[in-house]
Every structure is written in structure tokens, then in C-alpha cells.
Length: 168
Figure (cartoon, rainbow, N blue to C red):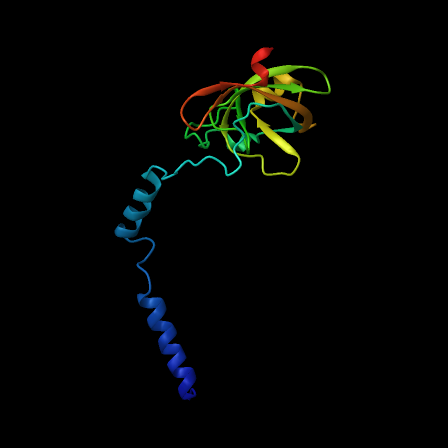
């Protein structure tokens, strides 16, 4: 014979598991899961707290997007294409066009900031595979010292400012 408290705990546990949630394989649960998958993302884009609208050059390390992100949505709601000139920056506003120069070999390429990141200290930009290849950065190396010189920088009032890279 079970003790009275153990019996009550068993009954409560049975009632909770039997009635807590609908079965995962029920038609209603499947329909709800399908609606959640087809629902467009509700992303509210906000500029970073310390957005850099100045257009000045920045030096740091560049890294390369991992291939698994191909097709994923970026902060500007477009899908990441490894063959594009997409880049990610923590501080530059979305839509900024910039010239990125590899400081090791002098190669440069033009990129457009479409995403946020990288989230590693010391890194100033994440590059698409195509842009990294233009700079001579391979997946084996992974990172390289770069200078990011904005060409055009969208301003909060809707205007566009020429940056340090526009003079080139």
C-alpha cells in the first residue's frame, strides 16, 4: 500500500501529464505548427545603440560567414547569398557601402552592409565568401586584418553621407 502523500503525488502527476497539453500528433497541433512555420518573421529593425554614421575608416579583423548561413535571413530581411557582396557590421548602418582592404596583401573589394555582427571581440566585419575570396581570405585562414572605409553611409534623417572611402 502506498503512503497517502505518494498516492496523491501519483494522481497529480497522472492528471498533469494526461491533460496538460494536446497530443503533438493531433491535427490541431500539426496545423498550429505549420502556421508558425509559414508565418513571416516579425523583426523590428533598430539601429545599434552606437551606430557610426560618421563615415570614418575603421581597422580590425574580418572573418568569413560560415556556409551554413546560406539562405538565412539577414538583418535587412534579404537572404544571405555566399556569391554576393554582403557584409555584417556591428556599428555601420544597414545599407552602407564600404571598401574593405586586406592589410596583408593590399587587395580590396566593395561590400554592402546587410547584417549585424560579427559577435567576436576585435572583429569589425563579416564577409560573404565571394568578398573574402576577392580579398584573398581563405576558409583555412578564416580571419585577416582589414581596413573598412565607408563609401556611402545612410543617415538617420534619410539622407546619405559620403564616407572616407568615397575619395578613393
